[in-house]
Length: 166
Ligand SMILES: [Zn+2]
Image (tube, rainbow, N blue to C red; front, side, top):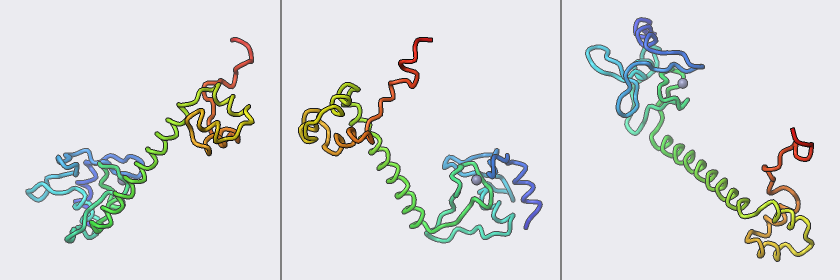
């Protein structure tokens, strides 16, 4: 534990939740920097050193901020991980995000096709779902979802509708 270094680093931080946000210089690549021992250094590495933790980044490893707060230099939020693991986790996170965004966009497109009147007609109809699906340009499962009321909610109808004007 290097108390003097720790004090110097912490004097340039602001506590935000359990993060320590760096108020000093941030490099063009987004890394907190500090002038220490006659040279500009990584504030995160120095923070690890100040806590007596290993700060050397081995070959094919990367220093990452586990809290994803890019200004954070809290030693507990810094990890040195194998590059392969980092890349894989990033890919998974990005892919999950893309899949979710695509699903949301698809769901929006589907419900945008139908008006409240269409939905009322589908719910009232006793025709086969494949006939309704064809007529309204949606899938059979979507038609049965509408009829089972698990799909398509009319957000335009206010819960106060029909209770008289205010
Ligand atoms: Zn943090």
